[in-house]
Image (cartoon, rainbow, N blue to C red; front, side, top):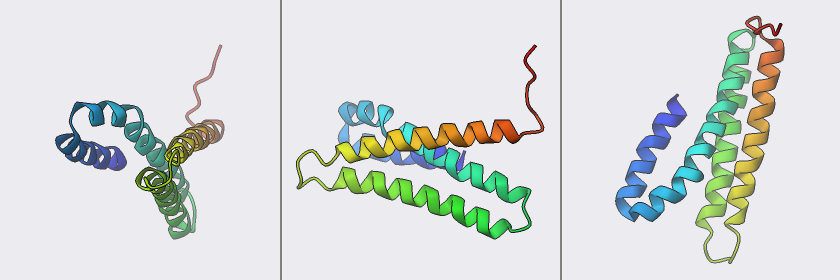
Length: 117
């Protein structure tokens, strides 16, 4: 939830500067990327809750979110190389795939599985 709160604040600032076009673009790029970064960080923070080495898992989660967000931003803000912004979308797709894997891993190891009948 913290990552989505940050994303909402960040999006408001960008939209005030850039207008409707920026709002539309960020709705399909920035919001999903922040959600996937939050899922990755939350997965590792959840692991830390049940681990003896809490600091390790919390740092891995934080570093994963920083790495993916930094990669995404890097490709977006390097505008002197034509077409390099495609890397931001690749980062988004990789983030979605890894988030799906984290959610699946959580569900398979969860005590709160919903039993299908």
